[in-house]
Length: 235
Ligand SMILES: O=c1ccn([C@@H]2O[C@H](COP(=O)(O)O)[C@@H](O)[C@H]2O)c(=O)[nH]1
Image 1 (tube, rainbow, N blue to C red):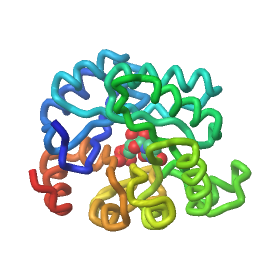
Image 2: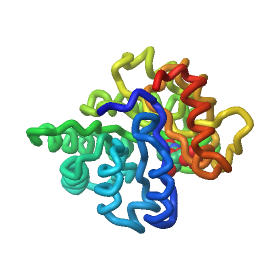
Image 3: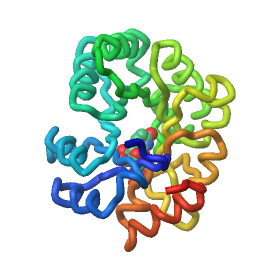
């Protein structure tokens, strides 16, 4: 089964029970789910089995960043656990990305998408300047995404504000995964580079990561259904 919706719901919960409770209210035909650092650290790999049993495709968002050998082993473990997508940091450099891509190619039944994180959507130009990067977010995202593509990545995590330029420069098949999605009227929180679901899709995003606007709303299912309807997703 393949989900028709581009929406990936971030299950950012402090316990396994809360995440499963939310997942049981969601429908794997209407969204994929994302397991991030908080949930994976609390629940461990068993959370992947539980969510797979509920029928979800899983984005394992652990943003690996280490020496090439370590990251290649980590993405291999993720792929063997059956996740649909896994990510690593583009700033880990070419050798780290290439060794990870090569490791996944060795797996005979490998179908896991390997994605590189560019500039976190919570960062703006002043955050980049503080860590010594003298570039706009768009310039730095372009640079890292170009490196990621030439290092064998299937796509990148970026903000939807960069989707248009990346789609034009790197081609429509290069997968753009965009967090920082905020429906009109929802709280921006700690995100700096945001877009609405419809704007993000129009800009060329392939997948839209939405956490708190869905999971912290009074009616998560209604927010998800409205976002899918606004995108014209036929479910
Ligand atoms: O650049 C990035 C990379 C990852 N994330 C993750 O996406 C979700 C966003 O959640 P919201 O509640 O919709 O803000 C969260 O799990 C982040 O860890 C990101 O936001 N930006």
